[in-house]
Every structure is written in C-alpha cells, then in structure tokens.
Length: 129
Image 1 (cartoon, rainbow, N blue to C red):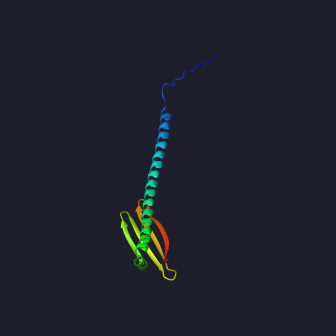
Image 2: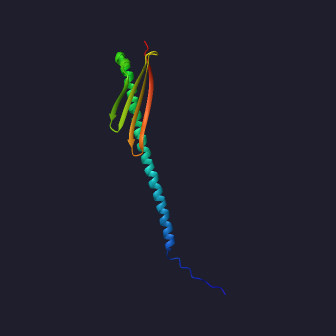
Image 3: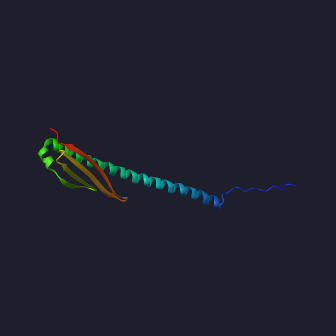
C-alpha cells in the first residue's frame, strides 16, 4: 500500500522570506560601500589633479620670470606661501651661486575628511648665457 501525501506549496515559509531579504540587504550594502569608495576616490583624484596643476603653475611662473626679468629671478630666495581656497602652496627657492643654479620646490597641501595630503614638484633652473 502506498501512501500519497498531498503537497501544499501554495505559500512561502518565513525562513525563505528571511533568507531572500538577507540576500537583498547584503547586495544593497555592498553596492553602497562600492559607491561610497568610488566617490571618495573621485574626490581625491580631483583634488590631486588641482594640486598638481597649482604646483606646475608655480614652476611655469618661475621660468617666465627667469626669462623676462633675470635679475629679479636670481635675487629670489626663501619661501613664499599662497592660500588657494582649500589648498596651500609653498614655493621654496634655493640658490646655488657656485653652480649658477636655482632649485625650486613647490609643495601644495590640502585637507579633506581622509586627512592631509600633498603634491610636490621640483625643478632646477640654470643661469645660461
């Protein structure tokens, strides 16, 4: 004799619903984390690009001054500081009189919610005739 059991699959159990909701929540949280990190990285890249642009601008201005007014350029020494919104640019001039060279270091710093960052460039210009 065979017994036939009647299967009733008309509804879902509460465990199946909880498992489905858990999976949806895990995927949603993962997407939120990925999106947040992408936004942070994008903001950092934007700020890094701007800081490097400010540093390049300073080096170009120094080259221009050297070409247009060499006497004023070769008298420069020490450090100059500029505030550019959230950025601070520090330009340092080191004259090596014996070698007739000027080393120029530019450091641009900025602060965001991840801490303090900086972008630095340097060049050496020579006194050629």
